Image (cartoon, rainbow, N blue to C red):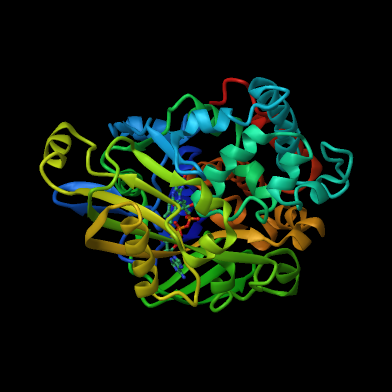
Length: 468
Ligand SMILES: Cc1cc2nc3c(=O)[nH]c(=O)nc-3n(C[C@H](O)[C@H](O)[C@H](O)COP(=O)(O)OP(=O)(O)OC[C@H]3O[C@@H](n4cnc5c(N)ncnc54)[C@H](O)[C@@H]3O)c2cc1C
């Protein structure tokens, strides 16, 4: 008999896992979602008939499973090929040219080849459950190397091309300054397929919006919206979940929500607490702010723009200056025609922090546009997101990733979503594809965390050149 599986959270983590489980024949899956909508940090806001992404936006060539689901749902993609970066001294260039400007002595192709070689070793380490004693690519322990900042990791390998790439893919996207974010996350996110998609200008977004994709996936699933969990009891071989809509009994429970928040209603025991980042100390969250504005006199010659000087400058990032923006008013022919006759619509990105009020962030936004000769006509929506959970370098060095991986499935408890991989849909779906294999093994009475289980994952998910 198929086990009863409960998933807390119907964001990309929960929905993709439920879909993958169902595809494998494990259909007794119920998602408990606190809010009244699915999609979590994917949020398409409709303004004058057009959808605009306030949360998840981009997809690259490596989003293979997501693309398959989009195809099944007849969701087209809208290409965003024109990505421009304003350089420190004020000139503008395309993102591809900017990245390749770091070619230096050994050349861009050689740097990328070197990066891919080391990335494959890192990826293999991850697939094997991040063993503590594995040696890294520069001779130290892997867990120590990936606790270094991503910038240090890249500099130690002379990879300026990738460092330039990461300024846009990490710092501008809210994942942190490259001299602070642990290489673990830089490597998880900057997979070869992402570099490939960006330098070949194949970045896109789902044309009707990400919300359309998640709504489509949810259609076939048992999703209980507006359900607040009050407490969970661990029973022999299962869980009793108490909610404001009554109790649910599950054999297996998956948490996709922040674990520090879940501690308010989930009875984590001492063994859980030693292995999982429940305390809010070993794993820290940041904040990303996206704002939908109607603006006049701003850029119209590219899909996105970002600012090198601000992204490189810690105080600008901390002040919440606009690091990136996307022109989002021209997804269709009709919209393009309209945007010639009226002010355009943009989504801007700033870092938030607890001491910055909404009004402070908007004042900075207004000032940044004014400095470019543009005007914010209307602020249509501002969203503040708890974002980018990352282990501290000390935790990574101390073997937190291996402990986390080896804890999966203990007492039939599983962890998915951004905490388990990285704050990006592709990482989450990839991690879920591996998790489903391990869950199936556990359902069949096997140990999802023994060497054979990780060896199986390493064999099945090893990176191949056509993984783009
Ligand atoms: C501004 C922004 C831009 C982004 N851009 C990209 C991009 O370009 N490409 C990309 O791949 N990714 C992007 N992302 C990241 C992507 O959106 C996230 O990684 C993804 O949404 C995380 O999925 P998740 O399921 O882990 O968490 P979430 O999306 O946060 O979903 C968690 C769900 O759990 C629910 N929940 C929380 N607590 C409870 C509870 N106690 N009980 C029940 N339900 C609960 C929440 O309501 C939510 O629906 C972006 C995100 C943001 C905010």
